[in-house]
Length: 68
Image (cartoon, rainbow, N blue to C red; front, side, top):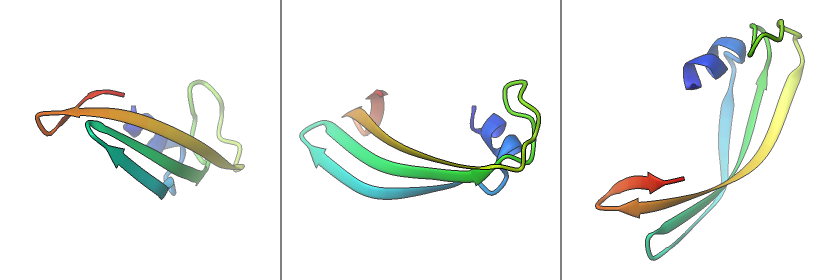
């Protein structure tokens, strides 16, 4: 999936704004930015910049991410 993003947004940059961990959970608040210079899911290159703010929660077990 990341190959698809990097093909469409070669300047893709993910900034981790904040990480919080408690017991087996890690929550990350990130900002993803890039410029669409390639096709993305059938959408032709637009040259437009995107900025996505996201939050992810991951459960860790035995040193591996087991839920996202």
